[in-house]
Image 1 (cartoon, rainbow, N blue to C red):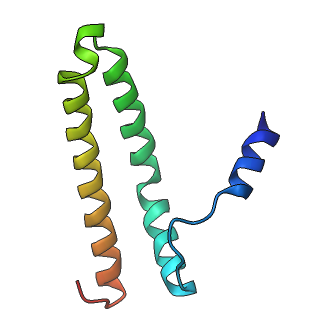
Image 2: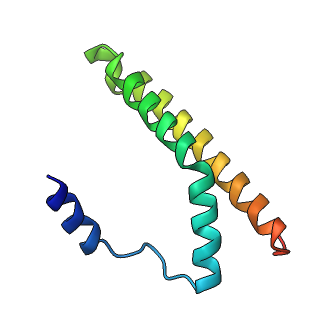
Length: 90
């Protein structure tokens, strides 16, 4: 199974091409939020597993979307804060 994950990782292309400086900045932000991301992802999965069949789509789906938006806002905030430390204007 580890070999399969390694092959998948090798095949994945980056979403966007970054300069070396941008890549370093992205890596710092990623390392900073990765623990929180894992907690949030686990919470989202648990949320969906707690829903009855009739709640899965509709109420459960919208609750999940709200959590994804909150997480996205946290990513934006962390990225902006890290850029500000480097003197990059917002």
